[in-house]
Length: 330
Image 1 (tube, rainbow, N blue to C red):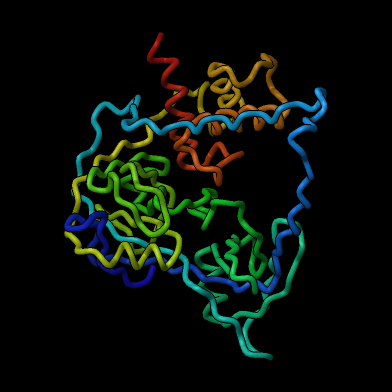
Image 2 (cartoon, rainbow, N blue to C red):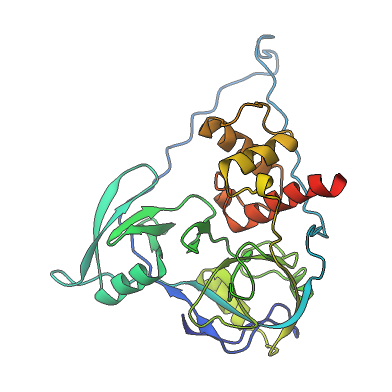
């Protein structure tokens, strides 16, 4: 992580202090992602209603509101800690001059592969940080992760990086922390962040999840992932306090038979939550993943970028909470 600027959460009350900033290499993509032309409108008249066999369009389901307060089962004594808050984001990469630099292979979400030549510095940063972002010729950002040396694949919508090499990082939701002290998947609550809007993001609710690490993030220090330089500049433009009161809910241990990090434990949780109907173990993997998707979609705090991954930080927290809910009711 590079040098960190002072950063706040609110006017007069801000996150910040000097910390270490994680800079991740960006790879500039040359692929074009143009949108197809819109379909021509269908001519209609007031005296010619559609045939009776034409089904009416399905109503848009109402958005699931986030609860203002989250329950933390299995956490008997939440930690009350004064935390130094800083921020990190993904920075633009530099393309190399002809005949110089390093070549990388990038595969987009459609499966198209492109060879790109970047500077040596960009290549090394990308290899270390395992995340990158590029801008195509239409000005659209595309985020990618490192699969192997010099090989990159585009990340799904809503994901702007990778933490712990397994978790999709979502801006203004995930933090890097000293995981010897604050375990992966732990929930964090900072009251000073409630209602604060940074960049183009939605107002924050104060809840974050430990999803990443950083060489300069040690002790009582959290590094908030903000995604891009625009949000980072907003974050750092505010006055900063050295620390902010923060509540830490360390990820509790679920019963062994309900551990979501195993297929059997995950299936048991999804079955007790009503998302999995098949009682036979072991189940086909796709049935478990289908049920997991339903569980994730029903929880407004779980980001789309984590869909399909039971070990992603926010998903893991809520799966463990579901596991403990059954034991608490017995």
